Length: 365
Ligand code: F6P
Image (cartoon, rainbow, N blue to C red; front, side, top):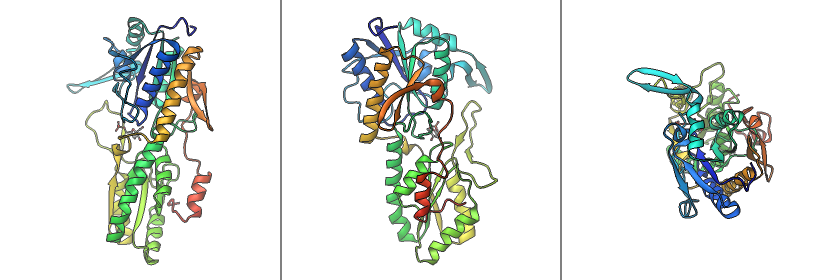
């Protein structure tokens, strides 16, 4: 379909929310209206809004006014809706079914000539499956975890790192006053990017990431050695997905079998392990969703804006089945298949880890 044949486009935000989503919605809407004269429909609550009956609201220059600094997403989102494998849990009963035909019907009912999916790994996987079925769609990568391999960086990540760093800065003063060890648990799923970059920026003594399984005795030795050198307070930044060598990752308990496994709890678990080995009073703080909330940094606002405008341009040239991405300093587009092919992990021999090691930061290995 050519740009002139397009009349109405849709946009949805899927998966966990992330600072910068509203910047994408604003830039996409403004570009669609001002450059191409398209109507824009915002789908409510991600793919949920495309199930039967569809839920959408018009987006125009007024509705996207003033939303650039807002965290979250004005459209709502969910990370529990895969239309190809829709899981429902009620009254003790778990059911699964394929509801993708409803999505195809909704797209027709809403009169959408193209769709823009703003999402992370999960939402982009689903987008690829719809693209394979012939849905004219484009993708925009988002996640605070920065774990998508086809883009150098995702918006939301910079804000999460900034939030975590500010928290670590605050924790330094109380930790120093009490001569304690403070463990700061950060998000990131299977990737240690947030832990590594906030730990480096926040001058942590120890950084524990999923890519480097740690040895508890090594961590304890590093902390005890600091204490002997009269550095009697230390910050340990641990990624929620980190695990001891030969051990398991820690998940939060849930009573809902339909819920996705929720990582979390390694920080509080480490408290006892470190105190037992070192005798140093140890406390833990789990930053959790604080890292996803609040206003995006200027970097994330601008990356979100560039991605949103580029997604509209990609639709205009018929670049369906593709996703916008940042390569170096340039916004480019890549095939969705490439985008969802592999997760991006911290390279354990990379320059960032090397720099941290050069500064004496312990990774517990
Ligand atoms: O993928 C983003 C993320 O914040 C992860 O870092 C974290 O593991 C997960 O989402 C938490 O998801 P939820 O909001 O469903 O608890």
